[in-house]
Amino acid sequence: MNGELAELNLRVAELQSELADCKRKGEALQRNEKTLQNAVVTATDEEKVRIARDLHDGLGQVLTGIGILSQGLTEVLQSKGLPDIEYATRISSAVNDAMNRTRSIVRGIMPFGMGPGGLAQGLGELADSVEQLYGIKCQVRGTGELLIEKSNTAMQVYRVTQELITNAIRHGEAKHITIIASQREGQGTVTIEDDGCHLSDDDDLEGGLGLRIMRERVRSIGGRLRFVQGANGGSRGICEFPAS
Image (cartoon, rainbow, N blue to C red; front, side, top):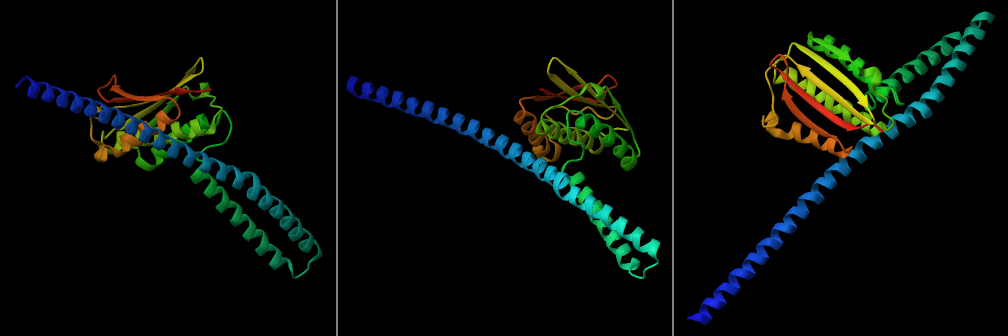
């Protein structure tokens, strides 16, 4: 009997050890998965920024040069009264159209100017577009303090801000939104405050996918995202991140 009990205790100890080992492997797998998700988000947006920069600095500059030349050609032909001016005018119009299309593509990939002040500019323009699109009040405060050196950090914060505003309108039914930005000692903060229904970390927005993506974006730049109740009963989504 004692031998059987000892053998049973030994087997229990082995199972406990195996269970602990499985738990450690599972936790390591979760960490690796989060690391991979962060890497994918970062790599994707960094590639978008690179493409936008190449289009702006490369193709954009070439088209600008062609546009200047074609405009000059049009003026010369016009001054001489030559019939070929019609073709030159068509070329100039086509080049201008190509330039506008290129700017539109760049704008879709990188919705604000490049450089340290780009995010501040983008948030201001985002507020204007929200007012025009949804017919609600959207204000911006303190963006002049934001000077973000890393374009990927600026992009992630901008995308999270977009999603927070969309959630405030779609799920919180907000009618007034304020974007509050600040930067102190290398730490940036962008807060989205609204007067709608309070949304917390536990709210299952679209199956929780949007919230998970936002958290992964913020985590990929070494920041954090949290929610608190606003002063007027709405929500405050607070995105904190290293600004340098």
